[in-house]
Image (cartoon, rainbow, N blue to C red; front, side):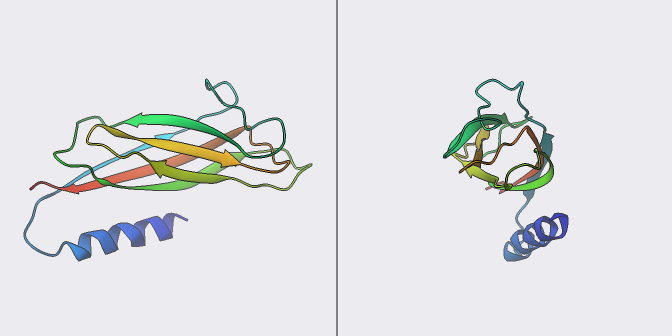
Length: 120
């Protein structure tokens, strides 16, 4: 997965080949069953937890955000289903939605994120 994220980042940089200055930020997150509104460690059906990720420094324009799943804690008595989605990207942060469905239970995830924007 790290290779896919790195290749995606390279493609973004390559597509902005002009002499524009780019701004990058990166971070990691490790939400788990103790996180407020975490409900994907029990129950059945579609469930999600939304987390607002704030950038250290606001961007001048809303950046492109890539998220990479780097770890997961889940019991082995059910199939594993998990999805990470980036929503509502602004200059100050973004919403990360962690989802599962059917009878899957997810105790924790670890993810890294990269944000990139042009300084125009």
